[in-house]
Image (cartoon, rainbow, N blue to C red; front, side, top):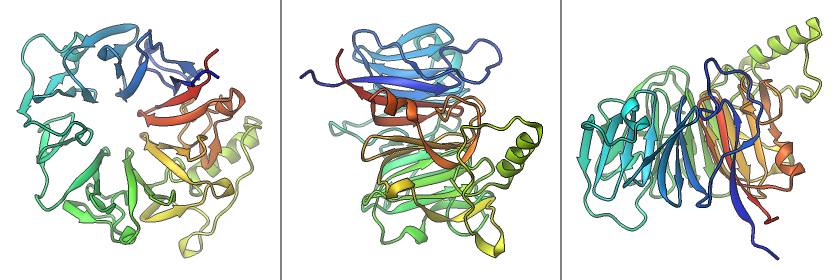
Length: 356
């Protein structure tokens, strides 16, 4: 029996397909990999960096440029931070789209010799990188970080013992400290203390973590249902669509959940909330987009929810949802999800598929 092979699919607005103003994504479509295959992806809004067997490559609207000599990327719409064996550098977006070999970098930091498998970007020795100025921020020496995630205004860190720290902007509850205040230094997310986490993720203004037991916790802004908690805005939108006859028949009926202060809707969740997936499924991976969330279960199924205007939820529509929904296309094709990476309006998923 042939061994399964890996392939990457994308749902929603794809930078590779972008020409002018994007519309609802037709996805899923397969990322062209060539003979080397694709190992990792790092999406920005208008371009994506992929790692193939030949190295890094930047792609945007039909344009492809190799990024020789680099091992990891951290892209934004202004700059991309590239990490190599001896240095990390920030290049303007335009230079990166030309191959990051012309002119001088906007920032550079020499790196000491590291272990064979260093922590992934944004982590760097002594601190972390950001794809916008000042490009590097030091971390307290006592904080031993395994993973770091960047939101639009906040930062999450997974500590050596599985503890979660959060700091930065907090006006949407995305720090999980129970308030809407900003925090300047890393602060333990006390609501998760004593529950070892295996990963953390940061969206635009929401956050997620997965425990070693496979439990999913979410907190922050729920404007588009990205926390999988009842969203007033989505309820009003759905009711308006039904009144005008524009409702989506494929959407499951809304399951109301009780919330604090007697209301059925949650706009901001300032403490981490344990999310129950259908059939009590355990989670292995989580990623957050601007206002949507995607998880992979330990059985290899992909579930998504939140803002879906560009088809980024993978349900062959552009509807938003405040309920976890399984991506049936993968099930129908017999594909097992292995990795998921959310862009702002996009979801990339790596699947295992049998050889033809």
